[in-house]
Image (cartoon, rainbow, N blue to C red; front, side, top):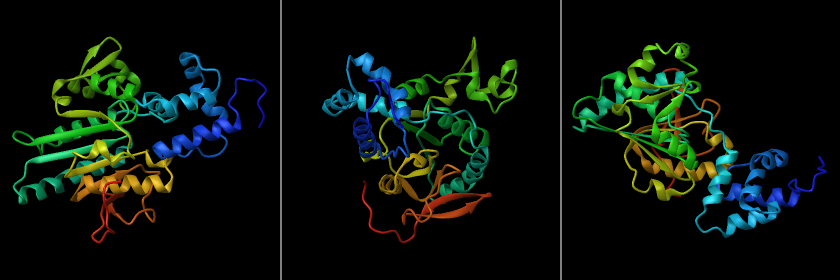
Amino acid sequence: MTYDRKDFMTEDEFGLLKNLINKEFGILLKGDKRLTLHAKVSHRLKILGLKSYRDYYDFIVSDTTKDELFTLASHITNNETYFFREKTQLDAFSEILKDIKREKQKKNLKELKILSLGCSSGEEPYTLNIIIQESGLFLWDWDVRIIGVDLDKNAIKRARLGRYGKNSFRLNGNADSGTNNFLNKYFTSDGNHYILRKSLTNNVEFRFGNLLDNGFLSDINEVDVILCRNVLIYMDDTAINKIACNLYNCLTDSGYLFVGSAESLIQRTDLFVAEYNNGIIVYRKSPHPPFTKRG
């Protein structure tokens, strides 16, 4: 493929940015994505007053704040999300909650901790909170904590607002009518947007972070369920193994890990074993894992 315009990204410039993205985030740009990357980040050169993608690369690597690095990452990742996405997995999550409560009661514990990775604008963590509240299993004196993590700062800001347009409810067919029971129960209306009620946001925390960097997970332990869905599909094997190690150390010994329905950890890591649960594959800690430490 050739490019006639001088402002297009050269092969060398693409190689520099491609390798940087892979090194920092484990994201593998497969095939010829030069034109795609150019289209997604060309406006950044104009905003920053830079003349070439080589200048852009030099700017990123010299920026000690890493702000532009994460801005780049936010432009190449897919933030597609909505409430109750991949419902079959969420149904399994709902059933798993019963097993978790039984195990907690045996240990006289009343804490539930959920981690949502690649949480984007927050629809997944809030969906999980709705499911937990609907279950009625963790009321009164239970401490329920949900943590969402994403590398897109703008997405995190939107998640913290808890304010959503109709596109976030496309599995709820009656959203346009404004009378949908789901919306009325959990949201207040604000024109064409819906704002989550405080009872669903008070126990949900959002963090900005890179899954390859264990630093943001260093204070998160004994997590009961981790959802890392539609994230690993972008990663190479080295990144997946590092992320798996970080997740292994966060999860309780009896915890559960969900990945996307199009993703698999089978034959990619020895840290987790797959099991069928309510018709889908979930992952549990391997009983005999190799030595691990945070990545």
